[in-house]
Length: 161
Image (tube, rainbow, N blue to C red; front, side, top):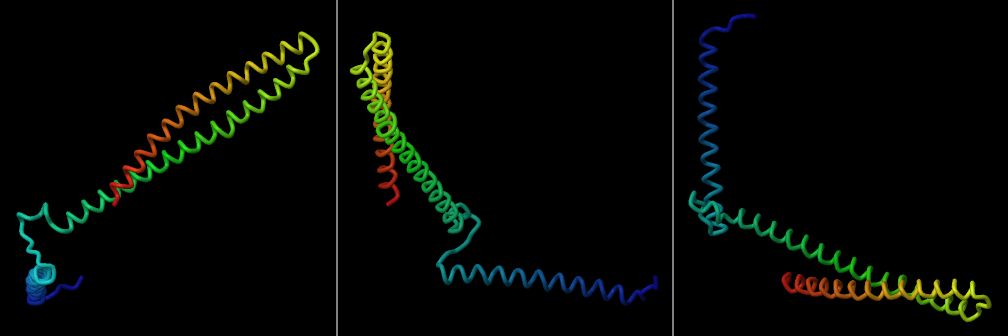
């Protein structure tokens, strides 16, 4: 490669050093300009002792706290909805189906003409009566859970406002 004269390489180093000095000066002026603007427009003085109470940090913490509240409220709403669905299932599927089958088993028992048919209908009737009792116990437990979820949900709503 061709050799550059010494004066050009020295001049290049001098230019580089001058540009670095100018960049450092520009950065310091810009930083001071930003600090002055924060002080003038937002009446806030940034100092090294106020880092934990810096408005951006406070806003960041507040944003995370709000997101946590939303997540918590969403979880409570989803839990309440799940409880309502379980109550609905116990009432409208489990107990209703048991009632239909109790009526059917009772009809079969009433119309049974042999001991064997009567025993089968009676066993079917007992099965569905036990099933209905299980459904009623489950409904009671699910209603208790739903009321507890409603209390948590209403408490979450009052905390949000």
